[in-house]
Figure 1: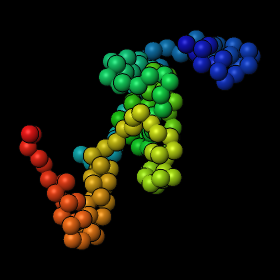
Figure 2: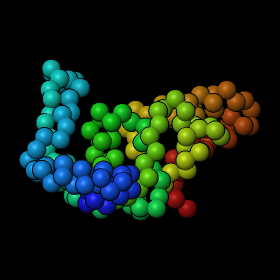
Figure 3: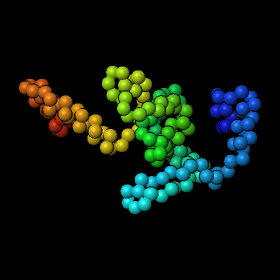
Figure 4: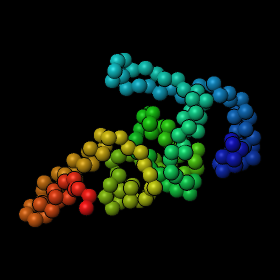
Length: 159
């Protein structure tokens, strides 16, 4: 696998170097340390091996409906285990991952519009902030526009 990716980025000497390095890596070798936020106590470093990462990737990548020709957006910090795990899966599946921040996501010139991704990961708090921004725009409306806006937010019964 290293040779395949290496050919995309390196000349033949670089590919040989990459193959030499990758052949020495063992499944139990440490690949990363992720620190917990410490919300339930002191922060702790979690040491993950190549086998840990690949187990997550192979066990969950089938759940991501993304093809190697598609684009995905990554805006959560990579220190966030959820974002890092999903990014590994995206790479494993060959998707093009576009990394950006949250400061330029929305609007006609934002990263969502520019990249037009098939998927992105998020967390509940970010969705709450988006909902609050939309809701506050509704509060600024008046008359019929305001009534229609808030009518659209109410849950409806199926016909």
